[in-house]
Length: 105
Image 1 (cartoon, rainbow, N blue to C red):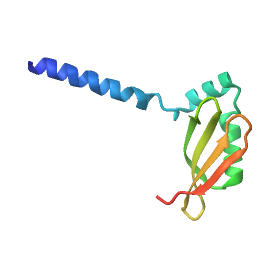
Image 2 (cartoon, rainbow, N blue to C red):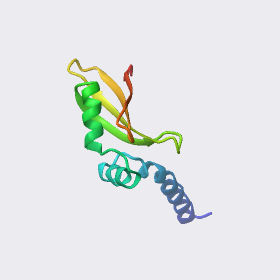
Image 3 (cartoon, rainbow, N blue to C red):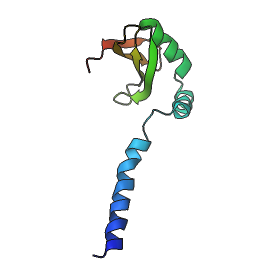
């Protein structure tokens, strides 16, 4: 196998592996589109509920489908005033705060 073929195969493999990473729900515009299409609460509403449950600064948010068709969760990582990191999950359909847990890592 010549060098070009090896590089072509390696590039194709890398592209296939990158697909799932690019499909992640971290993009706010994509989260808003999914929320609107699926009849979920908005990202802004979910953020307000998460911050009401655990005041602080949101450092990351994902929209996760938890064992479809059971529904979706907004999963927040929040840092409080003391610098402690928290995981807060909000049910994306009802707005119910499902989890508030200290992140030990």
